[in-house]
Length: 23
Image (cartoon, rainbow, N blue to C red; front, side, top):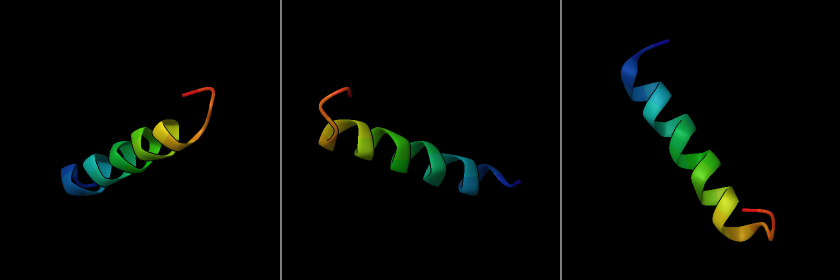
């Protein structure tokens, strides 16, 4: 897994965390 892919994955996780109440 490249660094770019990891950054995008983390970005998606944090973005979903902002939308979800638990985040």
